[in-house]
Image (tube, rainbow, N blue to C red):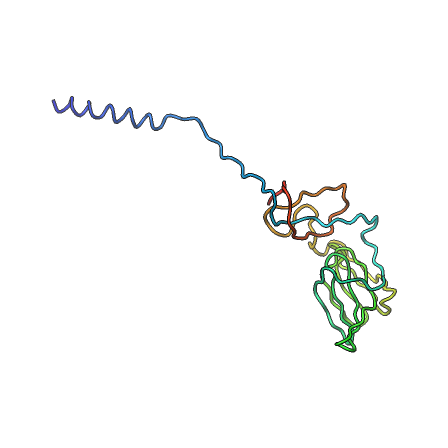
Length: 184
């Protein structure tokens, strides 16, 4: 009799256990909806035919100032992605902008004597700045840096997908994006 009651109890439990293992309809996870607006990265484009042209220009407004370097009475300030401001600071209360050196992709700089070192996108460029109103390219070493990745932004999260029809990506900036389609 004990055998019958054990099997009467065991068979239903076994059936319940096997039913729990029966494959059910698989539910796919739903993709995260694209936000209407979110802070993210946007590519900065240049349509310049030759992104390697470096030239002196009249003073420009500082829009997105970056790193600075002081040598004697002169302050050099990076305009992130665009070039370098040259500012005389003989009278600190009255700084005088004297020139702008256009260098696409510039983010870094150093100065030694009359030589300025910076990046032109991913290249190291050496500039003779004896006359800041007519700088001369002294040397270029290609692909020294990984400053600009034209395919992905420097940070994670949502970003505006690259559109090659808008030009060459020379940098990335953070801004409010509307319905971004790319994410890393």
